[in-house]
Length: 83
Image (cartoon, rainbow, N blue to C red; front, side, top):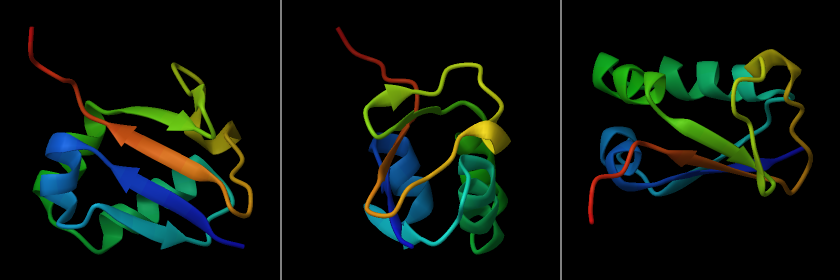
């Protein structure tokens, strides 16, 4: 099983990559794996990010309850500034 994590803006800068593959079964597991290979800066960015899984915003749902599917896509979206 493989799901793509796609990082945007500050999340991309903190991750050091635009995207990566994960074999995680849940969003919580995917984020834990991604944090385990990066520094605290990345973890702090993730704390303020929103997540969209296969086009569906996660919102306040428990990340452990959000199942990932083979070929799926998780967008990692930090807060955006602009106007």
